[in-house]
Length: 258
Length: 320
Ligand SMILES: [Fe+2]
Ligand SMILES: [Fe+2]
Image 1 (cartoon, rainbow over the protein chains, first blue to last red):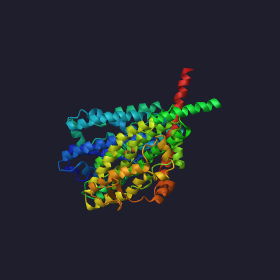
Image 2: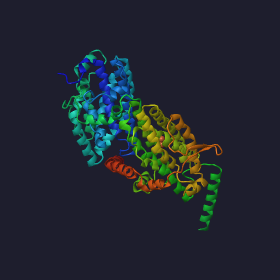
Image 3: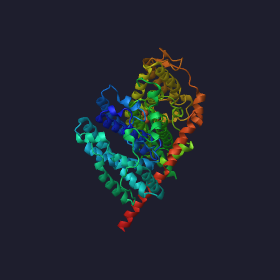
Image 4: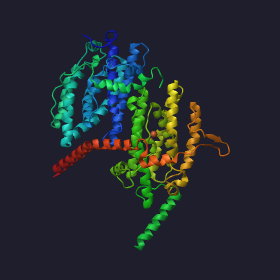
């Protein structure tokens, strides 16, 4: 069964790179929503900076996806002119920013994931992917160095902050399993040494997350596959709203230079 | 009592001499109370302007039309937050805390640039702000690199380096729109028309009306008068409007050979005072947004304080 519009005719490499680009652009959108809304001016700066790192990744991945596709589309065509059923990001990236606790918990879970993922992706046999990963892993290590102390402080700060962290983990629990779910076409790229077996990263991720949270006395079970569909264009209701905002100018005034 | 007065007279004379010798005044130096107050007023206002300015520009980050524009805008707004941060720290060197400054902003006691009380209605406003508002800010800030208070002067040197990128990205947006389709050209014209007068207002009232100007000039906090700075901005901007091929936002703009400057129409001072006094289109919204973000963040700041306290207690316990 295949639910993705037009996905059959797309090459595995294109779908793979596009998925990574969508992950990045969608997360950067959520992070950028903090600008002028953060608890400290320093955090307005830091969250914008991380958002900027993810826009940078999105651009590199989209440019490469466009090149792989070979139909003369640009990075902006891919970001601004595809619909919610054509976006293939993992769902965790698109969830609304929530409170500062939710944003930091999501970032922490993702930073830990990308830290494992990109460390392997730098060895991809595809040189472009390897080069993007090499740049991104440096950013991610820095992001993780920031999200760790935030999770620690909020987990052990006040009762309120701790309960917000616990609630955020509860809300995110159903979305972490998808990070480790391999698609068939992705598996074929693993065999060629281009993609990474995400499923194989799970034990290390579980151990790290449980160890870190455990030091603050917070329990978090193994990642379980619950809600899925992102890579096949089946999203939460939130993505459509995000895209209608993000794509508004390109959709209202088609075909113009900006 | 007498010796104190005498000491103070000596201090005052030393201060005056340093000002007249173009030496910088540093945080630990003696300075007259009014000089300190005046600086706190101007510098905190400057810091607040950087911070409140994030709102109208931030309004377009999630709707930027291309990924490149999004990245540029994000990094621009991030710079502005950084400017707010160094200016808050520079102002703290005068003996006021950031949270006192934020209280003053939120209670309306401290002001910020009234340009940010206008809405960014279309994407072209992002172009117009970078070009005109950052352009006007640069004209002012370049002269402030020579301001008499050391930490302020140094903050300005750092900030000016980033401002020229801000103006360039704004002008570039305007150039693309002005050379685009009819719809885009109209968008550019409209945004320029709306932002033109508020940008001229950024330089403040006429010198003859300015409450703080002459004293600030005497202390060399301000280095050029409001009207001179405004003229400088008009003179540099009119040729840019011509280059864009847009219609002049003011029909009275005309080169005056004799003066060697452009003449231009009179600012609507009624509007100027109305916006300064809180009745501009977005004054209420800007402060409400700032307060909401600040109070929503309270639980985070409290958690940080509490965590630090617990760490401190642990250390003390271990030492004992
Ligand atoms: Fe600035
Ligand atoms: Fe600026």
